[in-house]
Image (cartoon, rainbow, N blue to C red):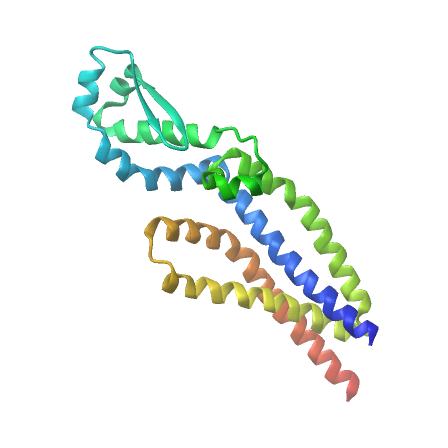
Length: 230
């Protein structure tokens, strides 16, 4: 009875730990500078375009050395007139969106990450978020390995170990692909959908691996079990 409860408990914990590990690793990739920059600049570009006019900005540069403006939750942002002239009209918007993103990404936070998420959700697009997710990877990897070992030790036979481990990996893979295919029905906002698509694409490899490996282990375990009973 205790073994059965232990198998269920550690099997569930291993499943959750594996899902958290893959999710945290994907968020660590998502919050890397280059990945976030590509997504965030694309999202903020229409807003910047509606507020800034190249000709007007050039006229302002005749009387000042830099263009300064304030953005709520980010702070003061400044762009030198020399860099505006150098960028030209073609790269004008890209220059401003890059500067805004750099300010956003490098912003310093004094609160802990979870607390910041509640009060300042823009913390998710910062180097602080990237450091937070990266700091969780090793502890989660160790806990996943330990839970997997304990779970396998609780199974009585090798065939049950193969089937049980395979089943857990299958569950992880199936739940991911279900979410992957239904997300478009629930999320209609383009910016959020773009972020989700990036996150899901970064997780797809790991969950595909879990699905294939899990199915293989389960089938091998099932075949071996049948042969031993024959």
